[in-house]
Length: 305
Image 1: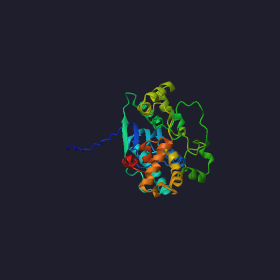
Image 2: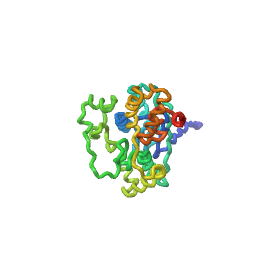
Image 3: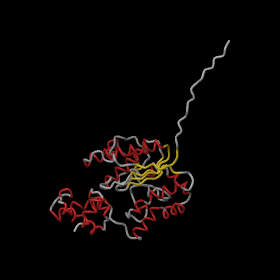
Image 4: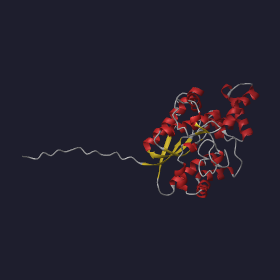
């Protein structure tokens, strides 16, 4: 009797790299992700929703006027899914509110795998936390509401209303989403969004830094901290984009009797932009953002006599 050899196909396991990811969206040059505080609140709640539905660990994040940063733990495809779903939710909200179609579709995203040596995770978290300081919005990360600025080494007990105390209808209204299955112990702060401490892996981040003193060292020596020192020489924070956006209609009305920037002639637009620069000490980049212009167009208009 002859032996019969049966060759079974070898199953090759897909190799996927799990680790920490620093994720950055491209800066919008001709507009804003978040035009007013209500938009930031919606963005914060969408991060919470995706943290609950996704498969990654959220370690740090910040929502800036024209871009966002995340530090996530997990596989790359999970991180991509997290960011894509967050952008999809927010794009739908933004389109319904402002009528902007395909918002963020062309907004590129960079995924950087953080090596486990060279204190890469500490540097990435510090980089994210210090964005608001580098942007001259505040003096310290904990003063910025829209991210994890207050989440780490904070001895104050988080205060808020448990999700379980909201009716399903009230929760849907708060979240701008049909998702109403969030953990009942998560806390909603007085500002109207779910506290990051409810879903961010605070323990993992604090264990990485070990002490508050060591975290402050990384914050103060990050590239964003150096940028702030080089550019502003310790000056007080400037006006936030949202404050200038809210002031533009009044400027248009008082100067030219028109309700919005879009109704102005090119000469009138230039004058409003100059008034923004004078009244708010705004840079050309900030003026371009709040007026919905490219940096090149804003520079050319403001250079004209």
